[in-house]
Image 1 (cartoon, rainbow, N blue to C red):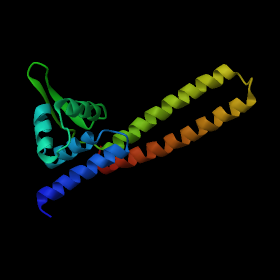
Image 2 (spheres, one colour):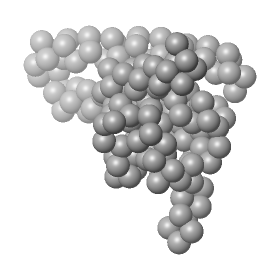
Image 3 (cartoon, rainbow, N blue to C red):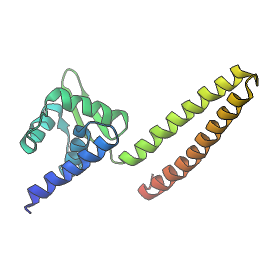
Image 4 (cartoon, rainbow, N blue to C red):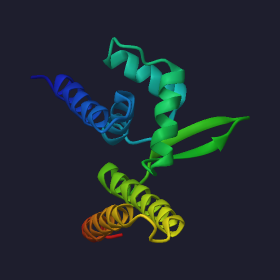
Length: 160
């Protein structure tokens, strides 16, 4: 295989991984492209480069949506302004897996808080509901401890 074909295959693999995690494939293509060709990219530049590689729709709006997702997870960093235009680059410490574990931790913390609020409303009136809530809280807390250990391990690996 020619290097270009291998690079395209790499981008497809990263895109599919994102898709399996429930994100647009474009997110993976952009992250992969930023890893392969590290520099500051404009939305238009990313769209044009991806159009060269893929025949599927890589319009500026679809690239923009993917960039917003990547920015919200700390994968890319945006510089510039509306007036002069925005440029994007990969965060030096970006890691999709780490970001996803953080997001899951936040979701679990919110879930626990909502269950605790429900538990307070119940005031032990419905003992079966109370048991079910306690079980869910315990499981979510166990998941959070495991996630915190994974996050710490990943951060240690990255030297953060």
